[in-house]
Image (cartoon, rainbow, N blue to C red; front, side, top):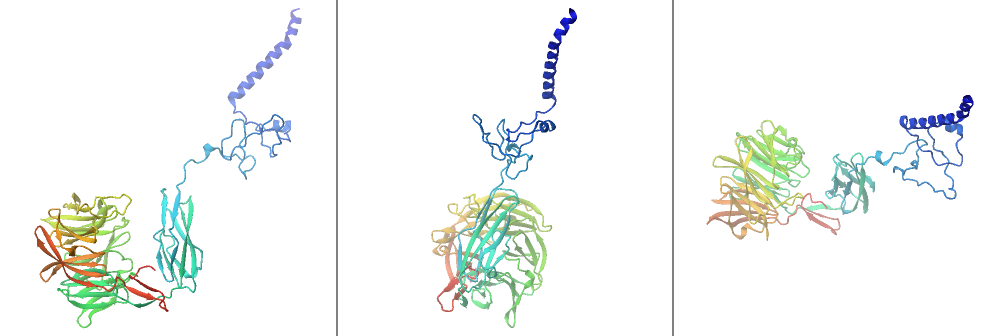
Length: 563
């Protein structure tokens, strides 16, 4: 009886064992191994059971899904790279092979690339033979990687146009002679290695056949002292005046004068160094027979195209030459054989002005004033400029040395309005301290500032209702000095001011556009009365006249003015 009851219970015991084993196996799978990926939707050609048993990971079928039957819904197809909804399979991107996994949104880079924006300005219309500076071209970029630029000729005859330094953002473009009106399209490409963009500039030119037919004076480049004499230059001419401003000599050159400086050597000979717009130099030296002898002067090279600052140090003549990103110091002990003493300031970005005191060099850039050691060329210190500097000079009062910086109209996007003179006291180590600011008028921007040697005065030019006007500041008392007289107003474009004495008068010689004005200053109350002693006008503020063969077109302009 017991044995028969046991046999009756065996089926139930087997069922319980199967159920317990099946439940245990399923739970173990869930704990020990990763759940397999969901099977794709059923296809018309279903995989065989043998194939399913051979591969534990379901394979996506290459066949397209058939039309859903009644009551079925087509699974939503996500965009490439998007995270699929639960229960759906991500659709491969176009071109992706079977079995390749498309990255989800979480695996894609989230950092956005910096945008590059280019602006090339308006189309340019000009005449043949023109040299264009593409200074209207701008690039806006917020990234940290330096941009690389490349200009190419997209259309137009390439043999009649030349792009100088096509890797620059604002290159020079030189047009050749033309037989007919011509158009070009130049393409500017900019890239940071990841992002690239481009912009096109249209240039059109006509055949003008302009030829020089005459020269009619020109704007005064400047006026300088040479011992007891005065040297001025305008157009193609260098003119020398005696102590009383009587004309002594006029030296004609074949090219216009871009800049010049003058000195008297140890033998007492007057020497004038002249640079033309192409960058080449000539030297004019006084000669007892010919008056002045002109020789080409290649030693200075073409890279010196910016401001020249001559000075004497321990009885030896030198000059500093401001280059685009550095400074050269030249020794002029032998005027005809200058020697490059050193190059310094390789860390500079854009040196604008320079002043020298003892063994200290002060260089002004757009936003900083740097102190450089004269002996080593090392940077000692830098301070903020406090505005856009228009002049820089050193002077002494009561045994103390000072640095004067004139602040003009702000050239940056800051829109600063704190104009005037900024005066620093120079300590024994050359460092700047004791900053004082002297305002002029109602905080007027200073266009130009000139020290008056031995008088502790500075002569300034500022904008006024009738053009530029002169102002004066007492550097010792740090206050403005009144100037009285109409002669102190109405200037057009002051390029240089030189002070001295003429016939017992304290004078200032001012190169103002096409006029060279001589002003006398006489004490009057707490200030000075200003009167005009002499004026040397030019016919026009022009350096050349060009005309077409039939005189239908006539151009007048300064040398270097672009067509």
